[in-house]
Length: 323
Image (cartoon, one colour):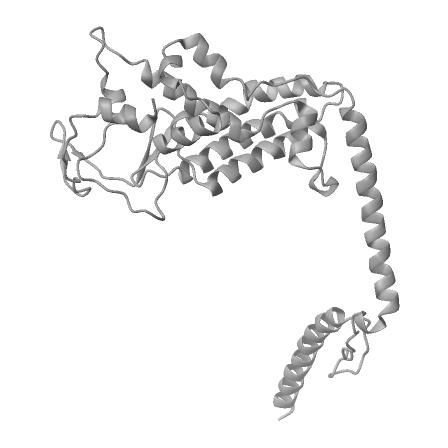
C-alpha cells in the first residue's frame, strides 16, 4: 500500500480550519504570552516559518565547538589510530550535529552545509587538507563510513516507523499518527516552487530505498531496524589508507611546486606583467633632506614643522623685547 492510499484510510474525517492570527494575544494565569519568531524547545530551535536554517547553524556551531575541543587531544595525535578516531567522532560529535534530525525537512543548501562540516571532520581525522584535492567519495571509502545523506534518510525512516507503531489498545491511531497522515479539506498545494513537507521526504526515501511493504515491516521493530540500517552500515578503515593518503599528499606537493614554477616562468617571459615601481618624492620640502622611504620623510616633516614653529615664535618674542 502506498503512502497516499494509507493517508486516505486514516484521514477520512478531514477537518476544516482557519489559520490563526499570529498576533493574537494569549493569556495564561494573567500573563501574556509573547509572540516570537523562534524559540528553543528541548534543545531544538523552532521557527514560526517552519524552516530549519537557524537550527542548522546552531547544530553546526555546537558540533564545531565539540570537535575543536578534541582537536589537540585526539584528532592531532598520531599515536591514536584512524579507526579509534572515527569511533570517538561517531559517539561525541555526530549526535551533537544530528540532534533532532528525525523531524528535519531540509533544503538542498542546508543539507550541503551539514555535509560540508561532516566531510571537513573526516579530512581532519585523516590529516588531509583541501589542497590535497581528495574526493569526498574516496574519503568515505577509505574510512568505511556512509554519506550524511544516507544517515539523514535513516533517521527519518526510523522516526517514521516509530510513528506507525503508535496505536491504542483498540487498534486506533494515536494523535501524532493521525496528524501526520491527515490533511485539510479542499486544501491544494501549488504545482511549482513549493517546499517539500516531511511526509513528502518520507515518500521519496521509501521510493529511493525501494521499500514497498513498509506498512507490514514497520510493525516488526527488529525487521524495520534491519531494513533502515542496510545502507548505513560502516566498515573498517581500508588497510592501505595511509599509503593512499601519502600518495595524494606527495602528488599535491608536486602539483603546487609545478604551479609555482609555471608562475615564475610566466613572470619572466612577460616583463610587462611585473609591477611598476612608482617613484615617490622623499625629499623634505622645508629643509631639503632626502630619505629612503616616504614614511620616514613624513615623520621628519612633522618634527621639522614643529621646530620651525618654535623658532618662529622665539624670533617674534625677541623682536617684541627689542622694541
